[in-house]
Picture 1 (cartoon, helix red, strand yellow):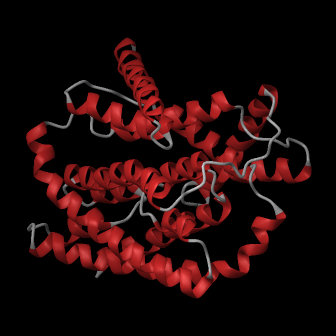
Picture 2 (picture 1 turned 180 degrees about the vertical axis):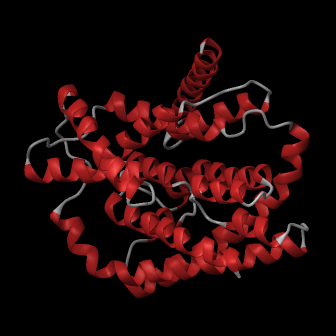
Length: 337
């Protein structure tokens, strides 16, 4: 117990130092990108950093609550444009998997099942569960997937901010929730998350936070956004969670998977960017928002980036939840072929 607490505290200290350094340098989404970078470095240096599973769920609930406060009639009116974009994104997901499977099989020598699971753009817990059940190379799949998440988490904020003039404003309400309101919202979201989990909903903790927060915000029962210190804490914890995935990974083993991981990431991102251009033309949606919506990163990390850069979160969350739902159906079917 003491050792686990020490490993977690080490991750948190590293996350805070990363945030302070990145914020001082003016790097976008400093709490998320700084924490991710620092904890990843600490893990790769050989330190054992851990992130408790229960705290992971609480962190994701906080992110969901923050997203839910941005639900507005104006955001929901845009729903008529979403089916076109969602369809294009779904095609990009399937095309990216098909291309990456061929690359991993014929260039890097992976078997077909491992290649399929390593090519999935997200849904890591679900994918690793399938890998363990089918006795696939879990380490290879986990590291290749983590390289993709790390790359997107660190690259998307600065690219959007510096190259495409992304806003650093906020779409969240000006009012701030009181601490008792936050606690009550968290408590109310837990049974919703468990219910969504029983229904096999993807990202059910994030969705539960969004649902309860949106209902409270829309009804006027709990209007307002999370206090800044809680938002920053959630971003720090998410960065620590991402970085801790590289803990206990020997450098030699990591190097074996770096090139496949970067190749899969490059192919997936390239296909996604082509889809973004089509969606801009077909659905008339803004480029910067589509980049985050189509980014094949962890939904929790993309949610944190969305909030920290001040983008409309409802459309983006809808795309990522659709991607996870598609993977829930597609992965078992692809493996049965």
